[in-house]
Structure formats: structure tokens, C-alpha cells
Image: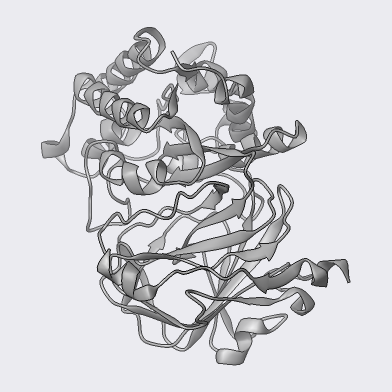
Length: 416
């Protein structure tokens, strides 16, 4: 009974779809009204997924911090076709994978409406739901797609299983889904916010290492997840928002594949507009170094100075929004199992960028991931105990070590 009572009626807010449509921009910002804080995210990438039509999509997410009310953000910001949903539901998990406890199911509304049409280029926030949630609690979001979407813009590397069901509109509230197709991507769900006035958020901006490649799927073993575990254990009211995109770079987009807009071009949308965001942890540019060689993009080769200039822009823009910025040193990647990704020149660039991160005082704080995970006998290699096997991405133990390296007091301490 307690679980049922936790799902009260939606709080009425004025969120007009017509107003959102009028404000349609590629990087439209969600509300930043006091008391709301982002507690989970999956940054959108370009259209790379299947076409959906008359299907239920169900996704399980873990909240990094609990609160007194909840709302979700759905995104069609990088999509090219309208997305029509007849209903969007939230529930607590059931006993089996991808199942829900139907007694806790509740429909979400958008400007008081259950159905919605999200035009290309637009994000949309649900009406708040008076729902008490706990830190590190799983919730399940399900929605029914009515109109053919065309190839959908997803978050490609979810490190979690999404279920897509062909069982019709009633499946959106079914305790378990039949006739399902599993997917390793996130669909349309880009952020979850809770109402908690005493809280703030830290946003991890990065690439596949932040996105969790190499971690055990469906176990929340990315390094930002382990960081959220530490904060929850110490009862600190700090949420962790993962803004990693696999393959992402600071300086270049690659729109024809799934790597997402560059860090510089998505900074406003994925970091600065996150409600309650007070700290940014930046861990990017290893792909700026390695990808031109591995992806046959010689015209996109960059120098260490180019990377540093990009980082300086991110720091300046984050500081302008009152955020502290923590710089993460680049992990070693000698022997990376991607042809053309690593060579001696690439290592020199990594060392130069790491030297600047440590010594320039450009960042408010530094988290030395490199020192924490490198092999003390071969500093250009990941320590074997932390290596997922491709010599570029950490494993679960490596991601845990990364989270342990973050100074928690620095997340709320004064800026330089």
C-alpha cells in the first residue's frame, strides 16, 4: 500500500505545447525554476535508430538522487520527423527484468494532456508528478508511439536494455511485455528531474568512457554511477547527471554517425541547462586525438593546443553560468585495439593535454584519472586490473576507481 500512495495526482502546471513549438530551437532549454534538479540523463545523438510505429518503448533508469516530485524530459531535438505518443507512464519496477508493478503505474501529462506530438528540434517537459523518490531508486518509463517516426535519434550506448513491444496500446501499462525486441539504446527520454530545494547536480561531460563502454550492462557500473553511490552513502544532496556520448569529441561533429554533436556545440543543451547544475566534470578529447587516425579523417587532426583552446572555451562558458569546473586527466591508451587510434604522436598529445590540465590552474579542481588507472611500470598503458580488454576503456573495477578518485568536497567547495 505504501507504494501505491506514493503516486499521487499530477501537479497542475502551465506547460503549453504551442508555446514550446514557438520556442523550437536545436538547443531549447528546460525550465530552471527553483527547487528542481536533474538526477539522470541520456544525451541525444543524431538519427541512428529504427523506425518505430504502434509500439511500446519501456526503459528502466536509476535516479542518482531522490526528491518530493518528479518530471521527465522527452527530446526530439536531433530528430527529423515528428514523434507522436498516445500515453506516457511511470511506475516502479516489478519482479522480472523490464517488468513493472502495475499498482504503482501512473500516466504523465503534458500541459494537462496525455497525448503529445513532439516536433523536430524540440524537447518537452512533463507536468510534475507528486512522487516521493529515493536516491539510487529504479523507476520505469513506458510510452506508446502511434505514428511512424522514421529513423529515430537515440542515445546509442545506454549500457542498459530497452524493451520495444508490438503488443498494442494496452502494453504500455502491462506488468510484463510480450513480443519484445531488446535494444541497447535510449529512446527519446533525455532527462529526469526531481524537486528538492536543498540539492544540486554535478554533470559529467564526456565520451564513451563516461558513457560506460566496457562496463557490465544493466548494472549501473559507469563511473558517474559509482560517484552517485558514494554521494548517496554519505547522504550528500548532490545528483549526478551523465552527459557522456560514445565517440564524442570536443572540437568536431560527425553527424553521419552516432557520436553526437561536439562537446562545444552541445554544452548549452546537455550541461548548462541542467536544473541545479553547479559542477561540471570534463573528461573529453581522447577521441579528438585518436579518431582522425582510426576513422580516416586526416583533415580533422588536431594539436594539443587546439584541444586546450576547446577546453578553455568550455571552462569560460561554464564559469559564466556560475559553475565550478573539474578537469579530468586523459586515461592512457597504448595498445588500443582500434587500428590507427594510437601512436607515439598521439601519446605526446595526451601527455601535453594532461600537463596543462594539472599545471595551468585553468580548472577549479583536477581529478587525476590518469594517475589513478595507469600502470606504474608502463605509464602509457591502463593497469591490467582496470582494463576492459581493448586497452582504451576501463572495466567495472576501473570505473569504480575513477569514482573513488573524485574529491567529494570539491563538488561543493569554492572555485579558484
